Image (cartoon, rainbow, N blue to C red; front, top):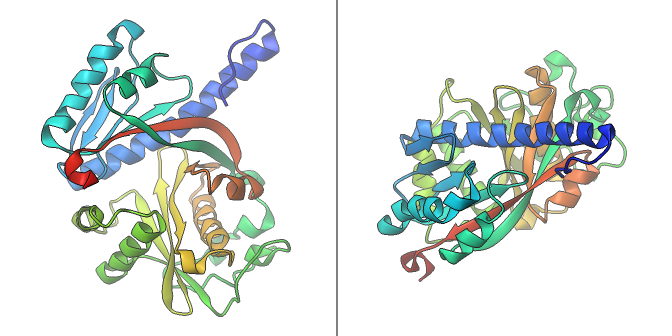
Length: 311
C-alpha cells in the first residue's frame, strides 16, 4: 500500500519506495493495455492528464491514469465518459492508489459508474523465487513440452505444493490458431465473461492473432487432454506482467494454477526479468500471497454498462 509522507526520514524514504513500487505496477499495466490496443487497431489517447482506449466493441474499453486537479474532475469525467456513453460501449475506469484527485471516485459514481470490483497490485522478486518457481536455463519449459513434472533444483516438485499427477497435466505455449481458440474459451469461462460479450471477446483475440512481434505469450494447460487453465506473460519494458491466470471450475483445487504460475515466472526469469507483477482478484489474492507475491497497492475498478448490455 502507498504510505503517506511522515515526519521522520524513515517514513519519507518508505513513501518514496512505495510510490516507486506503485508506479512499477501502473507502468506495466499501461504498457500492456496500449500494446493490446495497438495490436487490435483500437482508438486510444495517451495524455498526461488521462488515458483511454476505445475498441469500438463491447469489450476492453478502458480509462485510466487520471492525473488532474480536483477542480477539473467533474468536467474531465463527464467528457471522458461521453465518448463511450454516446456509442453505448461499456467502459471500465481504473483508479489506483495515490493517483488522481481525491474526488474522482465520487465523480465517477455521480456519472453512473459503479465500483464493480477491486484488484490488488502485487509484485514478485524473481531473484528470490522459491525452488518450485526456479528454472535452470536450458531446462526451461518450452513450446509443447510437458512441464507438469518439471524438476530443476527442486523444480515444480517442491514439497508443500499441491500438485496434480505429473502424467495428467501438460502446459504449452500457444503457437497456432486452433490452440488460441481453446485458450480464448478457457480464459472466458475462467473469468466469467458474460455470454452476451463472449463473441466480441473471442473476435478481439482472433483479430490480434499470434505473431513473434507481439510482446506476450499465451499459455494453456491441458488436464488429461482437456483444456483446463490459461495464462499470459507480458514482456514489459522493465517488468514481466502476469495476466489471465485462470482455471476452469471443474479443474480447481488441483494445484494447476500454481503450475501455470510457475511456468510463467520461470519464463520471465529466463528472459532476464528481476520482477514480475500482477493484479489479483479477491479470490486470487490469498493464493498469490502464499506463493510469495508482495502486496503493493489497491486498484478500484468502476464500470458503466449500457442497458443494451444489461438486458
